[in-house]
Each structure stands twice: as structure tokens, then as C-alpha cells.
Length: 430
Image (cartoon, rainbow, N blue to C red; front, side, top):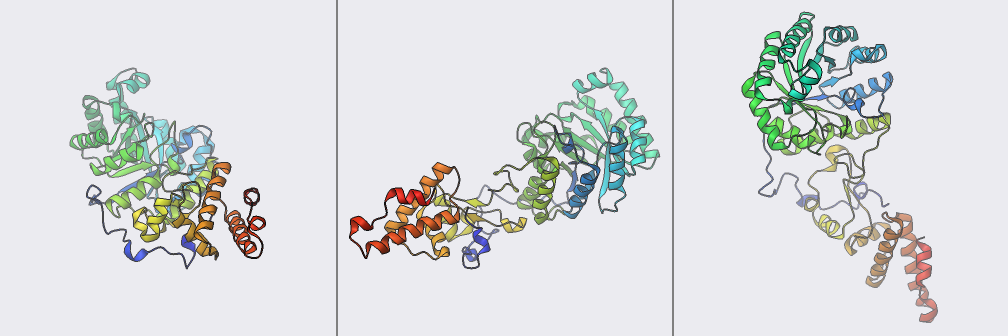
């Protein structure tokens, strides 16, 4: 694969005519939220609930430190009621002195609150079922029992000195007639935030925006949106919820989580930066190493095309795209890789054109005739089809050298004997 072109001092593209904040299409306009957004990362709780993922206590602590370094303001460190090892892991994070708000996830039970206190956290998310389906399964269909539990357990946690967020499980399937009395009970008991959870990932941006607007009319509690990605809309739903007035986003690194996962921290952070300006304290260049750390500890790997952190998101092969970028980077690259501590690169493959090939050859110091360039480009495409990947630099050099050697030899010998056979060229790239 070819080197990162932006790392070469003689290969910078025409940055003078490509302002990221210059021309924008009429339908893509930067908006303003007018407030700071809290990022509540739940990689260590909901992220770890993805099948097969199990962080050690030391890995949890290192991830928490990396989250803190990236500017995350709140970390949901786990579920103390799971047992002693989990409780101790949370205790280590809470006692590490990180400049973050460390919270624990709890069921609406006094015993869970006691476990959270033992873990050393100062804040908890107390989860209560809000939909008819969940209330039926967990509270026998009795809203009265849910209200009693909310009043009792939130009041108990507050009396113990904890900050409390009401976690609204399955909020997206709850009706106003159920949600309003639960919100009122939570507020009266001393809750300081409401987490609206799209637990099954059934929302779209329109419904998310409408729902948050409706909840804001029901309560003065700050709202946190927790979106699942079953329909591939978790990030979009989170942005819509924030634009509708939610104060916090519940996210995970690499979008880890149950089933299809959650809204990805890196996607939400960069989208907020790009679409709304600076509305959070996330240090964007720290996202890639953070994502790599979580990927290593979770045994997962980001897809090549995964937004923000994927290997190929700043890679260009298409001849049309490369030709445009050689004139102006903004023609096919509006998200600056530099803001993420990354670099763009060109590769040569099946869809490459002459402009990209010449650009690479110029860096490598080759001067070829137009006919040689066309033949080399054809060989590049043959290689890409055969090997299902872009051509490596060393193979390109061998092919270019073979073609140029053939030209030099033909100047000394009769043409039939001098021309490089097709089999010889294919031999050079095998």
C-alpha cells in the first residue's frame, strides 16, 4: 500500500484554496446548540455487556484513564451489584483521582445503592422500567409499584449523599401517561437528571427530536439521551436529541454495547464538532488511540470503513476523487484528518486514474512516457483484481522499472527482441 501522502513534504495538496470553513452547499449549514454537552461514556458498563466482552479490573482502569485523557466528563464505570470483583474494579476507578464524574449503574433497589456506596462512587444511575412491556415483566404490570420504588430508592440514595439520575429503561416505548407520574416522583425524591433510553433502538431522528421535546415539557430535569444502534441510527438519534434540548449524551467507545451497540463516542463527538462547533471538551486527536485501546481490550476491531476511526476513512483510490483532491483537498475531503491526529493518503487500485498514478510516480522519481503510464495503470488494475487490494509501493516500483528498462533496452536492440513481454510484466507484479 502506498505511503501516507501528507507525510511527504513535497506532496502537500493545494491547501491555499481549500478552506474547511469556506464554501458550503446550501443544504449543509453549521448550526449552534448554544450550550455545552456532557459526554457520559458507558463503555465500562453497557459496552462491556456486548457478547463476549469482559474487561479485567486493570483494563477498566486503563480505559477510564484514557477516557479522562480524551476529555470525557462522565464515566459509568459498571454495576456494583454484579459482585465483589466488579465492585472492586469500580472502587479503583473512583479512587484513581481522575478529573471525571464516576457513576455506577443500579437497579431500583436499596441493596444496589448500598453496593454503589461501597464502590466509592458519588453518583448513580437508578434504572426503572417505563414501558408497559417492561413494567409488566419487572413489576407485574403495576405502575403503582414502580412509583413506590422510585420514591423510596431515589430518596434513600439521596439521603446517603449520592447524586441520582433516573434511568428510564425503554423510554421510547413509554406513553406520557406513564412517564409523567414517574418523572414527577423522581423529581420529588431528589433526582438530578433523567436518562431517556431508546433501549431497543427503535427510534429515528424525527421521533427522537419529538420525544425529547415532549419530555422537556414534562420536567425540568436535565435529559440524557441513551441510544442503541439496532437500526444504525444511534448517532443520528443522539444528535437529534441534543438539538432538541438534551443536555448529555450517553455513548460508548467504538459503539460497543448489547446487540448492535450504542451511539459511538467518537462519532458523536466529531459530528458535534463539525455540525455545531465546539460544544464539548473532547480532545479529538485522543480518540483514535482511545478507540484502539478499547478494541484491543475488548477483542474487537474497527471495520475499515467505520466512521472516524476506520483504516480507510481518509484513504482515496478513485481516479476522479484523487484528481479533484490534487487541485483542492476540499473537493472530496471536508472532515480534516488533522483534527483527529490522522493523515489522508492515496492508494493505487482498480479505480485509479492517470493523475493519481503520475502523482505517485513523481514522488518515486519516475519519468515515464504516456504509453508507459497507460500500460502501468492497466497492470495496477490487473493486480488489484487479482489480489483484492491496492498495489504496494514496492510492486509498483518493480513494474515501473521493468517498463522503463524495456524502453532503454529497445533503444539499443531491434524492437522485437527489446519489448518487455506481458508475461514478464505479470511476473514482476506477482
